[in-house]
Length: 114
Image (cartoon, rainbow, N blue to C red; front, side):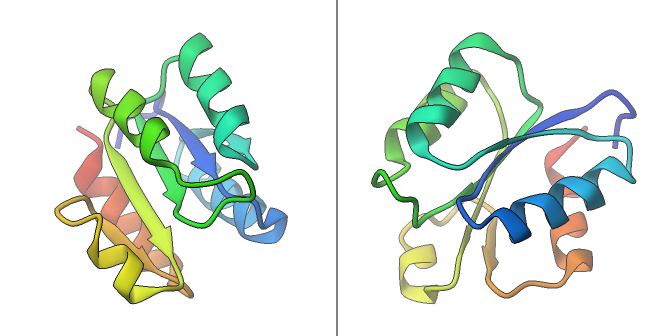
């Protein structure tokens, strides 16, 4: 993982978002947290990210437009959800089923970042 990497964490559960951001920070990745699709879209339009971690259940709807925007910017995406059936619909993107271990998340991040 690059020491200057940046990640967009799209997660409405603050505890999970903060935990993931802290873990990424200890590995040299700057994290920006967005609690909704609309907020994440604003960040995606104004910033540059090396990775997006996207929860599939957000308060303002499906994250499909956000995923499309990240793909258009060649930003790798890891999707997260507690619903395995919902996750399966987003394959072949890297998938993390909640609850996940931090090691599993780090493994996915390592694969996604150059």
